Image 1 (cartoon, rainbow, N blue to C red):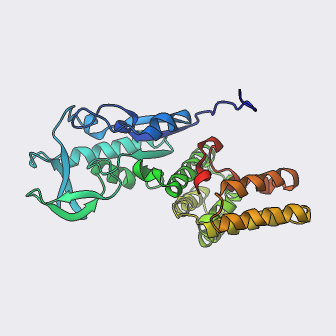
Image 2 (image 1 turned 135 degrees about the vertical axis):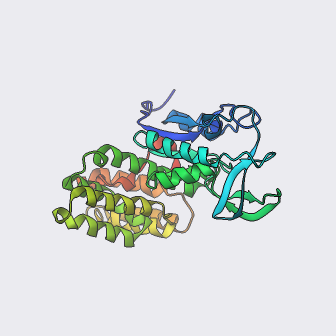
Image 3 (image 1 turned 90 degrees about the vertical axis):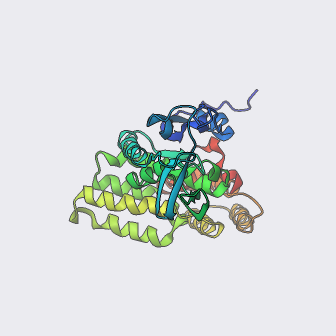
Length: 326
């Protein structure tokens, strides 16, 4: 029996995903590459939109394997492994562009199958015409087209999501982009932009103090520039900033900034206890969730509405447990 009943998380966000990762038997050999983390975890929190480019362009199941064939890291096509004259590049690129147009209004992130000639985000082997490895790598054709067509969309490979820092970074971007879609995409306003920037202040500071300053300068332009242009300039730098990895040093800096809002209202004992936990985090003794949880407790009692509204304190669903390993 649970000590405290917790409500089931609401699925508000939809993610695009390579269909084979969900357990669909769509690979060239009629099998799948089912991801346990997707099947047993993410389905509890997100709607998933499975896509298999090979099947969608009519290649069938089973089918001839494909590979990237070319002469350089920026000059390759996707062709049949057994019959290189079978070139699927143009079809795959067109499907990527069509998918981007059809999904970008509905999804807030995309999880790709690593090392795939269609869906691999990076490090996909490129081969010579004679079948020998070129010694170079690139992105799968569908993934490359998707990334070019949707530069703001958070995209990550399933394999890289096993890295705690990359996993947290991806979902920070997913939840931030979803909020932007809900609040600013279709009806941007100057006041909305100010409010959005205000609650992301310390999240941005954790990823790049320099870019946080630049984003503040964009917001300060205000009505001197059409709001659509201002919002477009802002979100491009905003999403680029969140792709930068936050570090223990930058997290520590933000934790100390947030503590500064309540240090005068805390008892000496509580302040010292908070400082010790932050130092323990800084030196790698405890994960980020510990100082964050303690700080949120103190802020609930002593913090202003402004500081309690900071997305940094809970950038994604707590039940995902992403900060437990940071």
